[in-house]
Amino acid sequence: MTAFAAFQPENIGGTTIVLSTTGADGTSYERVVSPIDDDGQLFVAANHWPRAWYYRALENPNVRVTREGETTDYRAVPVSEQERERLLDESGFPLVAYVFTGFAPRQFLRLDPR
Image (cartoon, rainbow, N blue to C red; front, side, top):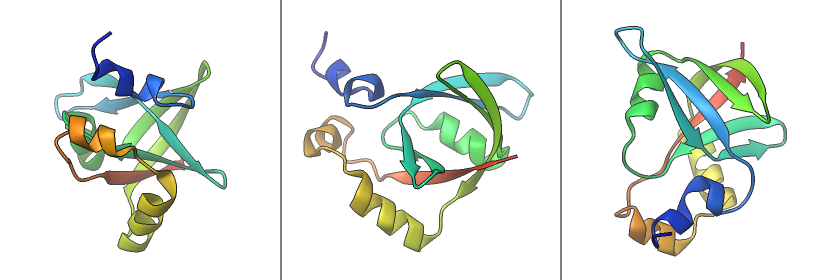
C-alpha cells in the first residue's frame, strides 16, 4: 500500500458510499466518497483532485447514493457559506491528508432525498 492509499476514504475511518453522477452525454459515473452525516442530513465533500464527480453533480444534481447495499435518489445542492464553515469546523480532515491532496479547497454538497 502506498502512503497516499492509506488516506483514501475507505481508510480514514467510517463507512463509504458510492455516488453516481450523470455526465452531459448521459453517461453514468460512480465515485467512492466518505459521507458526512450531520443529524440525519447527508453531505459529501470534494476533498482532492480529481473532482469531475463534483462538477457533474453541480451540472446535473440528480444523483444516486449506494450505502450499505441500498440505493437512494438524491438532489445534490451546493451548501451555503454558513453550512460550509460549520462543516469545515465539524468534519475534521487530517493535516496530512491536506498535504497529500495539494491543499485543495474542500467543497461540500448537501444531498437532499428526492
